[in-house]
Structures are given as C-alpha cells and as structure tokens.
Image 1 (cartoon, rainbow, N blue to C red):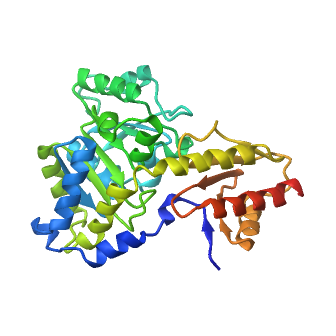
Image 2 (image 1 turned 180 degrees about the vertical axis):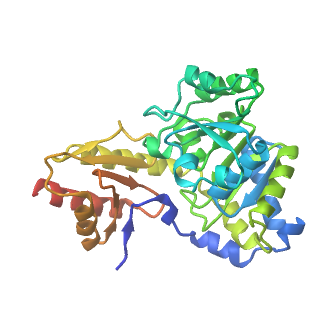
Image 3 (image 1 turned 90 degrees about the vertical axis):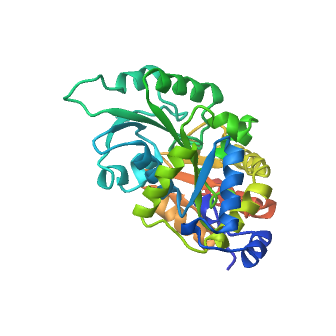
Length: 347
C-alpha cells in the first residue's frame, strides 16, 4: 500500500535530486573539519540566516541542546515557553545534561509570550536566585498551531534581551516556513537572535540533520558541545549533500504546502463534528478538534483512516494534527478530503 502520511513533515523522504547528490557527494572527515560538502552546507546556512558561522548536527533536539549548553553555565536559567518543543519534547536534556534551570512562561495561542511576562521572569542579581542567561523562542511554533512569530515581535524580545544583558536563541526547526509565510528573508527574521537552529529533515525533505547558526565564537563552543553529546560524524557529507539541495531547491516551494493546508482546513472546518483549534493555518499545520458529540474517538479515527491508506495522528483529548508537506500532492489531498467527508458527513 502506498500511504498518504499526514502525521508530520518529518516523514518526508529525499527527492531524486537529493539521492543523486548523496551518491556523488565529495567526502572527508567532518570531525577534522575536512568534509567539503559539510563545509559548503555550513557556509550556505550561515549566509542564508545572516550569521557568521554554522554547524551541522544530527538532529534538531541535539541542535537546541548544544546551543543552550554553549550559551549557559551549570546553574544558569533560561526563559522558555510552556508549549515549546525544547521544554515538552526534548527529554529534559537542558536540565539532565546541562544542569540548566528553566523558568517556564505561558505561551499564548499565537506562540508569543507577552513582553511584560518575559521581563518579569528575568531574575534580579541576588545570591538566592539562578542567573538568567537566555531567552528561548520557537518559530514556527509547533504546539501553537504552526503559528508564526513576526519580525516585530522577535525584534522586541531581542531588545529586552539586550537591555538586560541576555542572549536569545530561536528554535527555528521550521524557520523557513515562517519566513515564507511572512514574505521576509530568514536572515531578517532571526537578526536579533544570538543563535538559531533549523531542521533540514522536515518540510525541506532531507533525510536527516539540523544546522546551528551564530557568531564564530559561539559556534566554536557549540563544536565542543556537539562532541560531548556524541554528535561528531565522519564522512557526513553524504547527509549534508541532501541538505544543500534542500536549501537550494525546497525553500521557496514551502508556500505550496501552506496553500494546501489552508484549502484543506477550510473544507474540513465545514464538516459536522469537526472544528479548527486555531484560525486559518499560518503555515503547513492543521489542528482540528473532534466535537464532544462526535461519536468517533481519536484512536478509532486513526484506525479508520489507516484502513483508507492515510496516516494521521490524534490525541486522547480529541485533537487531530495534519501536516502538509512535499509528498502530499493534489491527488493525495483529494483522497484525504474525500475520506473525511465519508466519515463525517455519513457518521
């Protein structure tokens, strides 16, 4: 069976062009800094994000952890949203491995945290308190409907950080989705941040890998953190080659995923028993909720869609997340739409 997989954009497979580039990649030992393809990916990434340097790492989770370890000493504190990926889904690595304290602030539905709440979370200089070192943002914001943080908001948080002698890190796993949605360059969007990570293996379709960007001194610290975490890879150009193709060919087309997500969301919101958890999708994620009176529960819905060759994810609370990506073409979108109509118009 050829599946239609809407569980995440992490399920994307490399394109034929990526596979060819991987097969023909020029290689060296990246731990020695001698892999020309990795070096090219890092230079291209730094240029696109407007930073001095970059480092290729195996995953986004490692990227965020290595960046935070490079920014903070043991016992320092970071300000982080309660819906953020680093806080919820990265196994508590900053605390378990870095000895770093988290001051958790509440994300609004749009992924932001009010400026006054960020400022209120900054500790005063007192021996009883941990030292506030870092403000962490996420853009796009996964658990807030794939929402986009604006240039103005990030600049405002950057000013708060600067005024208090802090740094700002952006978990930009889907930063290119955010930039496309706003119609700005990625560099403009992350300009106030001391560091940013982004994933190659989500909507950009590369098979693995993320990149951390920042200034030269910071990236040298990240090198050490990556080594400590076991992230030093050898002939990693095999993976980096796909990342280069991703950055060169897959960024601009992300707008197509956004358009498809909006089309599908509008159709599904009109069906009985379903409602949008957020407004019209800002990017490629649709969050739906089963109405209380709907006779189908989340787990049963997953099974019924699997019978139709469609993979979706649903929580016990009745929330459904659908993620559009490169491998969801118009034909697949039509099949998904028809499957929802069959289940909810005739339930």
